[in-house]
Each structure stands twice: as structure tokens, then as C-alpha cells.
Image (cartoon, rainbow, N blue to C red; front, side, top):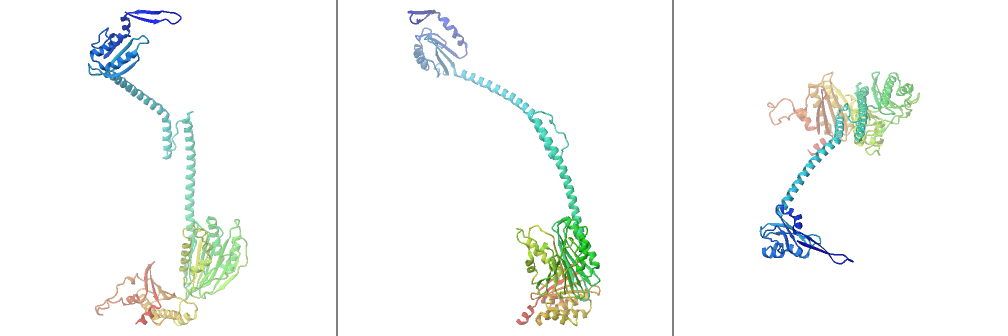
Length: 624
């Protein structure tokens, strides 16, 4: 038995006592004794062991006595907690089993009794491991279930978006006829589907419009290309007219700013000895200007057929172009006529840029051609007429404002008339050379800048043959004469005519006797060889000669078999005459005398160009 006494609270006096059986106190904790590895000890207030499952422990023995007797010093922390009546727990090594244990000391309220429960540390960790494994297994199961659930929910949410994305990709790939799903849904997916469907319909409509516009643009570009070809086909080719000793050369170049343009030119031969020419500029660009250009060009061509002068042709063109001109378009025109036999020229201008006269001595003159009103505004019955007679070697140069008003890449500087004069000054130029030189200089000035207007250049140069009897008199008497143009057939007389003309030309320019001799030898060798092998009465040898910057420039043309003298091997001068091949000495002589020699085969024509420095022969003669 055990008795539990509790003093009564004031004002009462005395004690309240209760007697209890020890077995009744032990019974509540006996269930712990059946747990594996558990040791249970119930200690009375005086430190007596009321019950203990610790091996070697004895009932009615004090806990301190048990520690001393059994040598269980590892339980000293429990003894200290008993004496102080406070709870504790600690790990310790069981001196009997040599195993780690975990012991808990817990006072039973204020009764003075204390309960000690000890358990094997390994068993505790095993339970923890099992619990951890269960938790991990449960977590994995929950995670798997959560993943499946999220996947299912996510699939339900993302599938419509994926289908819309697939539809968008199909649309990008060009498959735009398939119906779009989810357009009837009332959630955000439905809003997105309807938005995509509207965008798809709008893009389809715009693509159809772009396709139509592309087809229309392609058709327009094709039509403009055809129109350009037709327009360029309307323009005549350059030509050289042979009338006796006169050989005027006419040439022109046209570069439209767009596919088609408003500039135009024309050459018309009339009455066997008249060369008429026209250059014009319409007030606009593009298709309207091209149509008005075709009209103006046709009407002026008709007017020239019956006109008595360029002024008369412009009067008739003014009358025709002003009729039914509701668009109020106009054209500036320069019209001219040259008598091929006499070289006399007359010009009339309808508001056009004044032409230049490039003299044979390199001087450039601005012709004082008075202007009349442009064609197309109103009918005009009077245009001032200019008369002149360019001498052989001169070249008339006409142009449109696309030349003088061509701007550089910065758009600040125009080409201008002064730059044009400087580009053409100091040179003796034929019509073709004048056109190409001016166009190249304008293009070099403009660079990469887009053209601001159509560019048209027209040139007419005058060349004159010198006959045998009057060759020297003509060369000396024509002030500024720098060139001759001679055709020979197939006789020695014709060759002599050609060499005599060269002699007269060089004598006029004060060339030395040595230079005249070398030039005569070159011309004689080339001409004799051509007469023997290449020329006929129908296909004569043609020579153009000019003096420029102290050099004689020679150009020979014939329609004989192809022959390149620059590739001809030099003869063996050391060999005996009997062993030496026939021929080759003349070509060798020309190569030795000339300063430059160049050969080309152009459209079944042999073209041989030779240059001779006029002071070279004199230097060689002086050194000798």
C-alpha cells in the first residue's frame, strides 16, 4: 500500500489522506512493458523502485542503490532528475548490453512519483526509418496522383490553345481553308479563337488584294517594258551621210529617267541632200509624257515633210499639238536643217536649250538661237530662225535639260552649262564621240544619285574629203581644220590622193618634214595593203584622220577578210633575201614608225587605229 497526504487549504486544518494499492499504480504503465526494447521504471517519492523492468533491478530498492550496485553510471542523469523532481531525457550507452538507449524521466504531477521509460536507440531509428519510408511512399503516390491530375487538367486547358496554334501554323504554311475550332466557346479560348479567325479572314482578304495588286503591277511593268521598247524603236539610229566630198555624221543618245520618258529626237533625210533633225523635251515624265512625246514626234515628222524651214516646221507642229490638248502639256523643241552639199545650217527653237558648236580647234561656242514659245500651249505663227555654216571638223551639240539640271548625290549641285562647256572644250570630236563623252561625264558627276529627268544628247559633225588637186589649198585655207575623211577604191591613184591629203593636213599644222614623211609611209603601206587584199569599188577603204594635242590620229576601215597586223610576227631581217618569207616588211615598218597601233573586228569590218606623235620623228632625226 501507499498513502498520499495533501494538506487542506485554509481556513480548514488537517490533512486529506488516501491509501492506494501499489498494483493500482503500476497497472497503467504495465502496458509499456510489453513493447519490444522498452524498459519501464516507476519510482516512489522516497526514490524506492516500485516497479522496474530493468534487468538486475529489485523492488523496494532505491534507484541510487541500484545504480551503485549494478554500476550503471550511465543512469546518473536520471538519478539527478529524480532528486530534483524535474523532467529530462538523454542518450546513454547501456553498460550491460553495450547499446545506445534513449531514456525519458517524467514526474507524475505533484505526487512525487516519477516514471522512467528507456528504449533502444536502434529500435527508435528503425521506427523513424519506417515512418520516413511510409511518408516518402505516400509523397510519391501523392506526387504521381498530382502530376496525373495536373497533366489532365493542363491537357484540358492547353489542348484548345495547341489546336489554335496548329491552325495558325497551317495558315502561315498556306493552308488557310480549314475551319477553325473552338470559335463557339464562351471562355477565354473562344475569345482567342474568334480573334484568330477574324485575323485569318482579314489576312486572307489582304493577301488576295496583294496578289491582285502584284498581278496588276507585273502586268503594268510588262506593259511599260513593251512601251519602252516601242518608244526606243521609234527613235532612229545614228547615221553617216555620204554626198560627194561631204560626210556629215548624226548621232544621239537617250536615257529615260523612268521606264518611259518624254524626251525625243529624230533624223529625217529629205530631198536627197537635206538632213533634218529634231530634239525635244516634254513637260512631264512617265507614261503621260511618253504619249505626248509620241504625238509630238509624229506631228513634227509630218510637218517636216512639207516645211520650207525649221521655223515653218515648228509653226505647223505648234498648230497640231495645241489642238485638243486638254492636259495642257507642252514640249520644248529644237529643229534644224543642214544642207549636206554646202554645209549650211538653219535652226529654230521652241523654248529649248541653246545648242553648242564644238569647233575643230577645240573651242566651244554657245549658238545665239532665239527662242519661241514651247509647243502645245497655244498656236504660234512665228519662230526666229538662225543661219550658219559650220566648217569641216565642227560638231553641233544639242541636249535637253536633263543634262544641265542633273544633280549630284547630295542634290545640291547641278551639272550646269559651264561644266558642259569644260567637258567638251579642247577636243576635236565627231558626233559619236561627243555624245558618249558628254553622257559619261554627266554620269560620273551624278554618281549613284537617281536621275532627275530624261537625258538626251544629239550631235551632228561635219567631215570633208580633200581632193588631189585642191587638198593642200583646202587644208591651209580652212581655218581651224583638224581632220579629213577620205574613201578610196582600189587604185594607186586613190592611194596617192589619200597620202596627199595627209601631207596637206600635217603641213597646215606645221608638222616637221620627218613627221610628214613617217605619216605618209604609214598611210601608204596600210592603204596599198588594203587595196591589194581588201577593197573593191563597192567596198572602198575609208580613212579618218585628225590632229589633236600634237598627235596624228588615223583610223582605217575596210570590209576585207579579218587581218590583225598587231599579231603579225616580225620578219627575220638578218636572213638572206632568198631565205626570207615574202611579205611582212610593210607591217613591220608601220609598227616601228607608229607610237600606238590597235586593231578591232567590228561587224565584219577591219578597224585599225594608229597614233603618231608629230614631234617624235623630229626628235629621232635630231638625235641621229
